[in-house]
Every structure is written in C-alpha cells, then in structure tokens.
Length: 272
Image 1 (cartoon, rainbow, N blue to C red):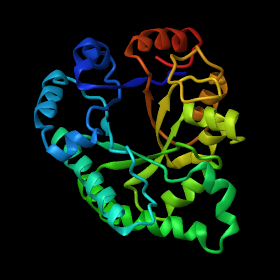
Image 2 (image 1 turned 180 degrees about the horizontal axis):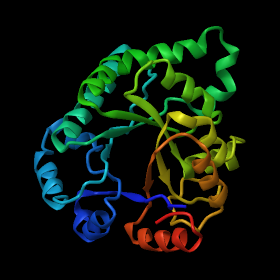
Image 3 (image 1 turned 90 degrees about the horizontal axis):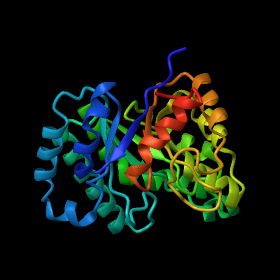
C-alpha cells in the first residue's frame, strides 16, 4: 500500500526552511500569510506573492491558501457586514489567483450555540443557509471560473452533517469540505461532538482538505502529531475508506513540530 503524502501549512517566511522537503515529493502546501485583514485592506500583498513564487520554483504539489476569517461569520444577519464578508473573500481570491492557488480554506458558520438553539426556531436552519448563500454566491461563481475549490472547514461544528448540507446546497464543484482534526477533537471532548473519524466519514466524497493537528479534546492546541489524544490510526483508516483525495496538511502551532510529526506518522505507517 502506498502511504499518503503529507503536506503542510506555512507562512511565506517559512518556505526557505521547508523548500527541499516540499519539492522532494511535491507535497501539498497551504500558505497562511494572507488571512490578515490589515494586509487585505492595504492591498500590499503582491510582494509576498512574488516571494512565495520564487521560493516555490520547481514545486509541483497542489497549492492553496487559507482565506480570511477573523471576525467574518458567513451567516452574519447584518447585510452590511455580509457585504464586508463577501469583499474579504473576494480579496482572498485575488491573492489566490495571483499565486496560482488551487484551493482556499474558509470557515464554517456553525457554532455551539447553533447546535443547541437552531431547532427551537422555525426555519432557522434554512435561514443560516440563505445567509451563507448571500455571502458566498458571487464568491463561489468566481471560484468556479478560476478552477479553484473553497474548502469549508469545521470550527465549532458539533454535527458534521450540517456543514455537508450547506456545502451541497451550492450544487457546485467549487465548494468542498475540510476537516480540521484538532477542531473536531476539541468539539468531541468539550461539546459532545462526534469523534474525528466520524467527521472524516461524514464528509465522504466531498472531503477535499484535512488539517492534521493533535489536541487533547479541551482546546484548539495545534500540537505536533502524537502529542495529544487524537486516535490517528482510526482517522487514517477513515481516510482510506472514503472515495476522496484530500489535501493532507499539517497545521501546527510551531513549524518545529513538522519533522517530529512526520517521524511519528512514518513510524506508525500512516503517511510519508
């Protein structure tokens, strides 16, 4: 059996350190330098794009970015704020287009409060979907035209099916699901969500992207793989059982954890 090739989430300034490692197996890469609102507002990101391109000369792995997310709820009920959300997402696509990225990670709108309260109000679930469509309608169309995929990542999600229903409602190949293992493990331990492998299996053929990080079920730790309590063998069994080819991206609090994570995954026969 060929082990899956693991990539990483990095800032542009980290690229020189990991350039050879990325190129040796054309690993997937997610650049995370472009979600800062100040950078998007100023428009002063072209220099970072050019530096990234320079560092990635010779890299043929699948390339993406993490899109803007700070304070940006896709289901915000205020139409003026939704207009800002849509604007930031379009600015993210500007960066992605300049970089030649194939995917952009965006955040789920579903909160812990939603899980406990949406069903108390008639039509509330449909209203969330309607508001997200208003925020993303033009963004999804542009992503389609670019050949880029929006990866909808779980954040506070308790039931992974809610996010899947939302993604499917766009009826577009330009929006798929992302599973963050640490977010799912936090939600499992702290709020009674399904375990991580169930998030993977729920996504099924719609799974396009995975953030690999370890955690303890209490908080969003972003520890190196093997430092927490995520059941990694079952996570990779789930990945092997679904009909999908997701980007497998180490997203760690410190890039110093990348090589120890790879050593752990290699030793356990889970990845390369």
